[in-house]
Amino acid sequence: MGCLDKTVGIGSVAVCMMLRVEHDRWGQRPDDLRALAVSSPHERTRERFLALYEMTSGTSATGAADRIGRHPQSVMQWAPVTKAA
Image (spheres, rainbow, N blue to C red):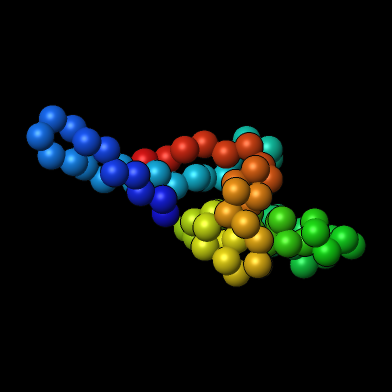
């Protein structure tokens, strides 16, 4: 989860945001993403669906990127997402 330090008044506060995959918006369940991660013919497609599946399970985009050896910004750009506090 990414945290940003913000100065507010005299002190500072950490603001933490985590990206959330909107799988319902696209008519998919997390299990659908996992099935696509296992069965897609192309390796890149499999890794993208795996990262998205992990993000639906509570893993951050950065954590998913670390597991598959990709840059976190790449993972963050793979699907429409909503920032969740």
